[in-house]
Amino acid sequence: MRISILGAGSWGTTLAALLCKRHEVLLWTRDPSIAEEINDRHRNQVYLPGFTLPVALTATRNLAEAAAGAQILIMGVPSHAFRGVLGEAREHVPPWIPVVSLAKGLEHESGLRMTQLVEQLLPGHPAAALTGPNLAREILAGKAAATVIATGNETVAGLLQETFQRGLLRVYLNDDVAGCELGGALKNVIAIAAGMAEGLGVGDNTRAAIITRGLAELTQLGVAMGGRAATFAGLTGLGDLLATCLSPHSRNRHVGEQLGRGRKLDDVLAGMVMTAEGVRTTPVAVELGDRHGLELPICRTIHRVLSGEITARDAYAGLRRFRAGTESDPW
Image (tube, rainbow, N blue to C red; front, side, top):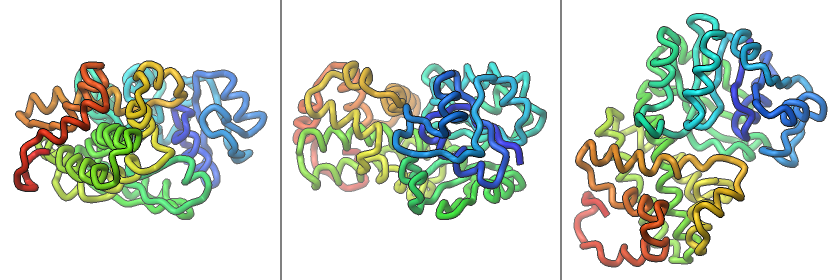
């Protein structure tokens, strides 16, 4: 199978390294130094420092070459770059091939999921999302993990499951595409809140409450947008939420932790190489909450922190002022 991956970030490069052991993989990047380093020194020190990549993995700066040669096209760019890169590539993409999204975000302007963008820009191409608790460094290090292929096309689902199954990476299938993508996007907002709790040192009880009530919020919004409630109790909901909220490798948790320690958002983001999707997803979540008449108090509070209206300390002090209610109530 010839597979092209557009985007040489940590997850795109990790997936390329796994797949090239059984398939012909071409990894595209705009950065000439990254392409050269992957081809000549078999490393990607910008996104995966300390790891050696397979000799069989090749990289290119030529987007047309990468798109034209694919039998499966994997989009490994962040959500804010998704439309632009796919738009550039689409005239070169062979007809009917599956297009798989790795991005865990929503388009800022439209609120669309990434598979919806694929359907909009490449009509007729089966669209899928690969999502779940997939911390790149752990998977590249050979640790066991599980991921989910979300697509409504049963034939394509089986093909992709067979393609991605590798060693200790177990691949599950789910036809609730909306639920899987929304779980992956919205959990990043809650991870910022959990990181803030860590940075403030408010304790594990508070952090556990935020994670649990955060799961309730993303489930409420996800179901309102067409997802199934059961999906949010699985790998692409609770599983991804726990990994992102608790792991020191999590970018979104890192952002929250630094905010909890009193740093400014612009300074935190300036010191990061990789994208923290939750920063861009938060205002979209709030807008979608308005559209569906949902309170989403955690998402709204994180939005106020990110916009500079209140501090992380103000946000957690505010928790003490919420009224008590049943567990089905919003926090």
